Length: 321
Image (tube, rainbow, N blue to C red; front, side, top):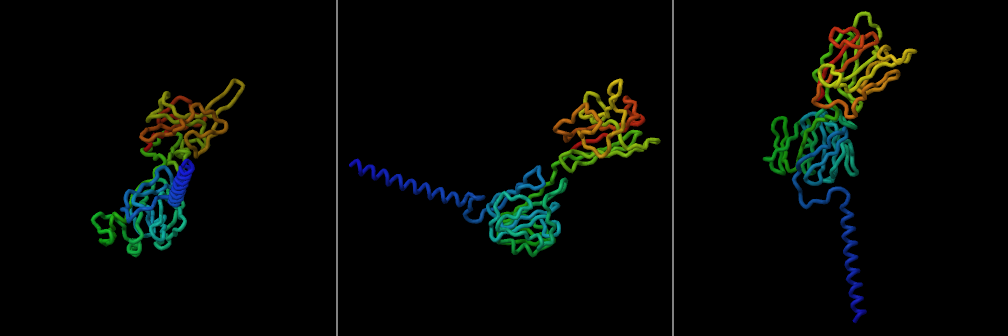
């Protein structure tokens, strides 16, 4: 009797093990990407990753057939397309990274005379859209027309209205988003006898670009000896964020701000040879919503005056957005 029970236990264990192995294999087949859907789910809610020029795009509604991106505020089959890929059937899985052509998909941007980009650009607006397979053949012939999601349009139908092709929101979804990784410089006003200061939007993580042109009579050197930034729209000693002065060592000790060594362009927080930084730029840099005062001076400045008529000194006020 004991042997019979042992055999039954062995058989039960083998059955359980076989079931577990089958389950593992079945799950492994579906681990690559989104699990298959039954039927044809409705497309919706395109989400675009922020803070990058090569965002990942996701959406709700299962696999899709075509994904595109246009520069501008419309999905349209024309030269504004910067990314357009298609799979045979609804085989595109999310997330998809901008610019990628996944296995089994084709780059079809040439069919609409689009201009492919390897990455997106700062301060530009882009429109991302996704469509199911069984509608692509119908809409692909409407080159130059805006593609729009319309809940009232029947799933298997399209409605052409002037320059717009309206598709069911069940099989077409779209989202528009602006690339805004870096701060924007606004409300720039420059003053001072030494010259004019220009501060422009950053194009990378180094921050805004600072340039100047010397215009004071008798000054021929385009270099400066000191530069700084404070919070607010006037110089406040207790609000200094960054300040750097030229440094010379003489027999009497160190002398600051009496030698022109700094050349344009510069970024806030830059280091220079022959210059002592008295205040290091905070790691977080300039902050959106704040006003700032940036000043420059050359070796002939008296080190005290900070008005519009101070010789050998200039400043600029600006706001960061």
